[in-house]
Picture 1 (cartoon, protein in one colour):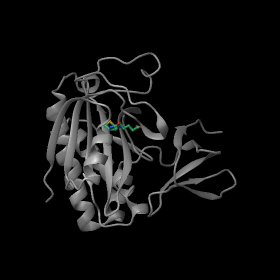
Picture 2 (cartoon, helix red, strand yellow):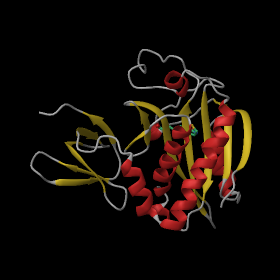
Picture 3 (tube, protein in one colour):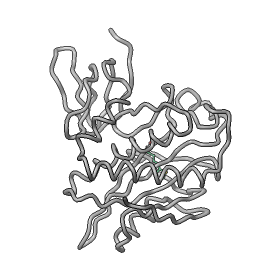
Picture 4 (tube, protein in one colour):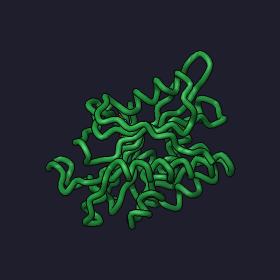
Length: 245
Ligand code: BTN
C-alpha cells in the first residue's frame, strides 16, 4: 500500500508546478501537494482554474507507474475513479465524463489535469485534482455547469481534511491499478461513465465529430459512432452533449 505524504501550503502558483519540480528532484510516489489557494491554477487545454481560499480542494499527487511515458496519462482514469470513491463517501454519486471530468447531477464538481514530469533519469505523472467544496453559488457563467459538495449536501467542510481523504482514495485506486492493470481501472471507470449511448459533439484541436458515445477502448480513447456508422477513437478533446436529431 502506498501511503500519502502530504505537504500543505497556504498559497502557491499551481500545485502541479510544485509537484513537477519535486518529482524531477526525486520525490517518492504518493507525495501529495495541497494548497488552500492557487494564484495561477490551470485546467486542461490551457484554461484557468479559478479558486478562492478554503472553497475547494486543490492537490497534486506524484505517481510513478511502471509504464512508458505515453501510457502515463492512464493515471487520469485512476484519479477519476478515486475521486468518485471519495465523493461516494460524501454521499454523492459521481459520473465520469471523458476524459477527466467528474460530474454530479450533470454539473461539474471536480476536474483532473495530468501532466508529465521528465528529467534525465526519471519520468513521473503529476495528477492535479480540483474539487469544488464550499461554494454556495457560482457566477452566472458557471451556475448551469458547476456544482459543489456544499450545494449538494448542505454541509460545509474543511478543505484540507477533504484533501487528505481524497489523497487516500486516489492512492487506493492507484494500488488497485498496479495490482489489476489498466483494463480493470477502465472497467470501473466505465460503470460510472457519463454520456454512454448519448448523442455528443467532440471538439478537438482541429475538428469536431458528432456521434453517439460507445464507451472507451482499452487505451482509454473515447469511441464515438457517427451518423454513417463509422467508429472514431478519440484521444483528446472536449465532449458536449447534444440533442438527438
Ligand atoms: C480541468 O477540469 O480542466 C482540470 C482542472 C485541474 C485543476 C487542478 S487544481 C490542482 C492542480 N493544480 C493546477 O494548477 N491544476 C490542478
